[in-house]
Length: 150
Image 1 (tube, rainbow, N blue to C red):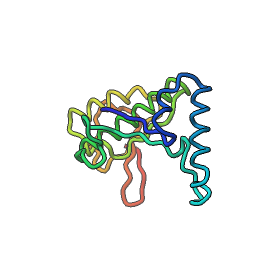
Image 2: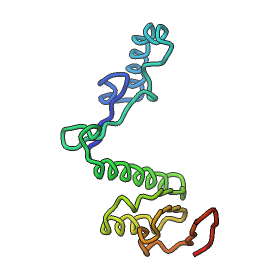
Image 3: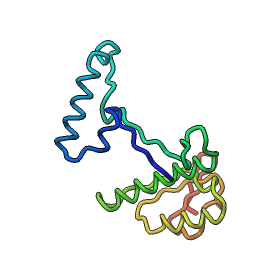
Image 4: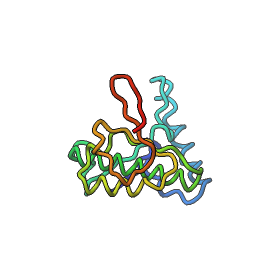
């Protein structure tokens, strides 16, 4: 997976050598965009307008990736953010909403091994057999508005 950061303030941000240089580049981009921003009534430059472009080789994933590839990208990003939060902020809650249905058995097992050590992992599944048995936490079944512990 290749990731490309596209800053709304232009290409120079990626090459900024210091915080001061980054500040100057951002301020210059804001000054340049000010008239257009006032005319349009929206901000055009800033981190909230930046983007991450996922690439499949040299092509952007958007428009070129298959359903499975897109799903894998989304899952990889979710797991990466979870891992980052674990190292910096304690134990976050990881929610995996029916992800196992989209994966083959080998990938299901690998994903389960990766998340099993987590302290707060919530997994939903429409089909109970989709969830690998390595995930040994408490299980509940929900049917016809009734919740029961399995």
